[in-house]
Image (cartoon, rainbow, N blue to C red; front, side, top):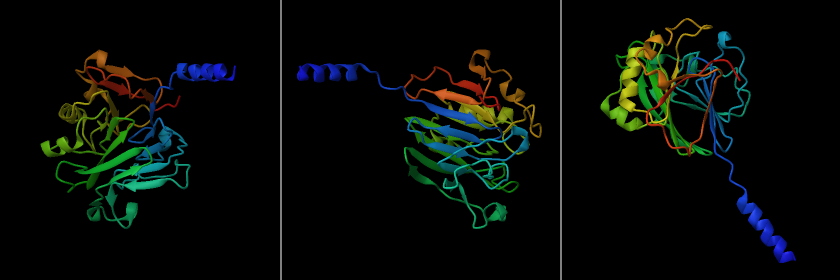
Amino acid sequence: MTRYLLALSACVALAVPAAAKEVLIKWHGQSFFEIKTSAGTVLAIDPHDLEAYGKRQVKADVVLVTHFHIDHCNFAQITNPRAKVIYGLNNKNKLGGDRKSDEFANVDETFKDVKIKSLGSYHDDVEGMKRGKNTIFILEVDGLRIVHLGDLGHELTPSLAKKIGTPDVLMVPIGGSYTLNGAEAKKVVAQLKPRRYIVPMHYGTKVYNYLVGPDEFLEDQPEKLVKQFKNNELSIDPEAVPRKDALIAMLSYEEK
């Protein structure tokens, strides 16, 4: 009888399907993203404290900062005081430093289940002479390659595009003024050819109109490849077969 029960228990255990993996991405406006891996690790990228987007309480395990501008480097909404902070640029005075003194940090490390790498780029199209340096972060998590372009201000050189590789998810600024505009962003997307999702960021919205809106970027994009989300969450099954063409995920800044 004992053997029968043990065998039955084993069969039941084998019959229970494994829980599906999920990578959850939340957009908190501007270039501020929260990413939760299937193992539960929470990353925040470029946190801000812009009043227009309201208070966001993000219990991050690690915070990534692409450059030292106040709308990308404000920890007021990070609730974990022990969160590790990884800067894409080095400057002994951080936010208060002279931007001409910023140096590329060349990050290449693993935090829990996430591989984090940085590549140097610029905030303008004259190698940082106007607005300084910028970081591109590449994350390897759950088999996905997630790329955050920071405040990129120029098209990619062939060498830089090759180093970035092919993203599964590409977070790209489209609002112009301080970064790529819509037309330039489309060229960068064409250079990188993302597999799953293109997530526009750093653009003007109904509550924050200091940047250009998304119209230029969305112009001439096939309607079937643009999805307007009702909230700020994008759930990804990393084991799903990638789409034939990447979907443009227009996330809302409003929380679920």
